[in-house]
Image (cartoon, rainbow, N blue to C red; front, side, top):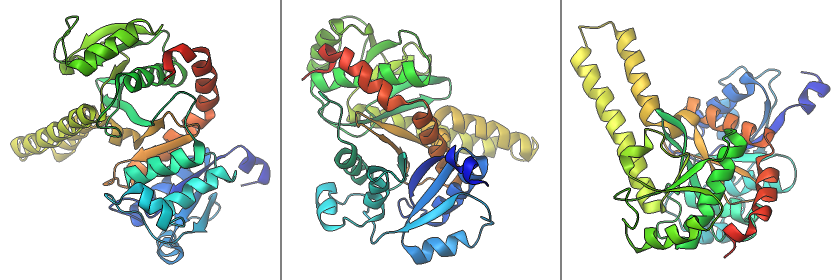
Length: 341
């Protein structure tokens, strides 16, 4: 690869030590992403195991470099404490690569809390946004319907939900090229006034927000794509996501058991893969972007294997290539009345 060709690549820093299957699957996924093109990879992690995993792959000519780190932030470890005591941990070093201009985005399959903390400290949040949120498509049947929050903030104030509605609408416009995306609140009924206090108070804010707010939707409406942005707090969103994943996994197992010996294995594999991608779209995309921060951070599943890691890196690349952050900040400034606290 020539120096000129390398200039066209988007540099992505990857937390090589984050996730249940690190560093083996993280490195393997990073190598796959580098082969697919469009990115250069900075693998951030413990030098010895990362080097050992790289040695398992033919990386000759691939735009992959490494940066050393010390320690790992494990899931459940308090993010604030981790940041104070483990500044050189892989997730914080991966974020630091963006801060210092060596990367345009970072990707982690590790601790969600630490990833959010790193992104918030490194990038800061958009003006008027109190806390960042995770979101993205959940269903293959509605691949352009964004659900947010899906687990970051378990208790949300109405203004936070209104903020997330604006952020989701912007993402839909910029990344999915949706004109005037429909925004809805997830509730227990579609009728006006249905829902708890949080939903009713958020409704008042969204009705005057200038967004294309269509009211409430129920959980079964999500898969039909009846709104491009569905807003809820992180507790509800995470329950919806995990339930969907569980149904998909159970259906795949049951169908494999029923069809085994009656249908060719290749056909069973195809059917189960379709079910998996329909019910586990975050895994199919590899991860979701962190909304509300002024930089691109993609947060993946702790159980991610190489394919999901590769897809997360490509999700980061596409988000950077679309200048999402710059466009979102400009639009949020225009809609300052919607997202002001």
